[in-house]
Amino acid sequence: MAIVRAAVVQAAPVAFDCDRSLERVSSLTTEAAGLGAQLIVFPEAFVSGYPRGLDFGARIGSRTPEGRDQFRRYWESAIDVPGPATAAIGAAARSANAHLVIGVVERAGGTLYCSVLFFAPDGRLLGKHRKLMPTASERLVWGFGDGSTMPVLDTPIGRLGAAICWENYMPLLRMHMYAQGVQLYCAPTADNRETWQATARHIALEGRCFVLSCNQFALRSDYPADYPTDQGDDPRSVMSRGGSCIIDPLGQILAGPLYDEPGILTAELDLDEVARGKFDLDVVGHYARPDIFRLVVNTSPTPAVVVGTGWPHAELPEPAPGSNNNPRAASTENEGNRR
Image 1 (spheres, rainbow, N blue to C red):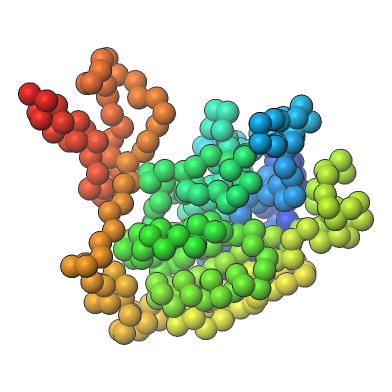
Image 2: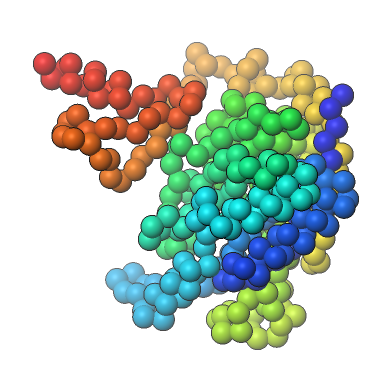
């Protein structure tokens, strides 16, 4: 029997302020470690904030100078991966001697991505996942991830993966997670509606995995004073009410949901429950019909610019480990067909 003590942190960063947000990561990680957590999960976009309510001055056919400046401010509070901020988060994981999963706003050139980072207890950055499909107006400020950052990591505490917020409504993404044998399914989110609870429980039941869903509890005071909101300027106004929870592989609630206050939820996860659950349901195994339905996943990186010595022989990106998609092989095959 393998027991993992897990914690989900329902709190808020200091929006648009990377340094102060990292201070909160450190203190909250220490607090979770004090509860015995071996796995600590933070919400979506915890460093450095979920831009709830902002439209960045965008209308169809026009953008405002004020909106552009809001984006500049948001970009400046984002982090490079790897970089000084990931070193600071890694130090928090190392101090806690725990695996740490955290939502960040990642900066790559002029584009921002909503990402999840995975850290080992020794502080190493194990991997990342970029949100594949930002939802609605999120697409104004976040780019689209590709198939090269959808890992399920084999760790000493179990097979660990993450999908962010409404990505979890993408059935094919979930199937890819299940096919990789995910046991600890992290679901950082910004959805604080009660209907999200049904989503978390469905995923746990469908994938026969533990689901650790984590959302911010954020007040107006967690955002800059000049941040425009529909909630007004009362520092006690609630911007995000939370709803964090931990669910077992049979859909039973182990902790939460927690609403309308900050807190750290913990639970003991018996990984043997994963195998027990798959006795009667394994959606990528004995409960699948690959003769009728089959999923093909492209895990190759898709950069906008590929540098090489000439076309069509330009150097293509290496396929991701374990991928059946090999752009080099495809290029060779196509060249042969042209002959």
